[in-house]
Length: 281
Image (tube, rainbow, N blue to C red; front, side):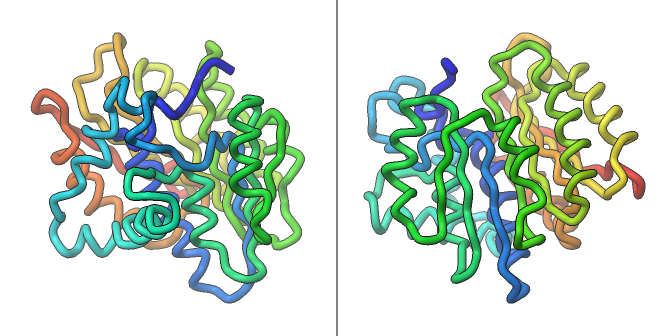
């Protein structure tokens, strides 16, 4: 309840998370059947990078701010939906705005699709509700994201994704992520789940990934991005578990992960991991 993403919006972790999110949304939009996108820890929806909170940390300068120089064409093709969604949000709300996951989801929704955004923090929920509840294809709920995850799947559309991005304020949250993700994937076997985690204590991440990989009955990808040497003392990177990944996501990750690791590296160190989890690993 103390975490406020306004201080961290647009940082390197957002870049990885939002790039993968927009790739999954683009994949879902390839079929005409409607889908539902559920964001369990939604935050404010979008953030002003010129505001005091973002200015205090300036983390976005080493994240989204480093994407100004174009990548090679193959990587830019993968980034295209991400860049287009940011541009669309800025066209409506201002040139210094950076979209959170709810705004990126809303940009991808077609007629018939639905977005559901859950936020527990009372102030952030009120801001999220003011920004998104008036949109015909989005709904904002106030509550605990872990409880909502279990309650809202499988959705009526039967197609869609769940983004899980908790604040990791509670000890043991990474293990909790793995346990909830395994149960959710069993309850909605055809859903796409995108779960974010920080890499601060590598041993905890390895334990979670190994346990989850043994519990999953569906294919999954582990995508890690390291921007600093891991030393158990500070945030050195982040990762995503993607359950039921789009069939081309692994190939795409083999292009964008090394490009991001090189571009976003801190102190000359950047690394990445792209590996399968689950029954096909």
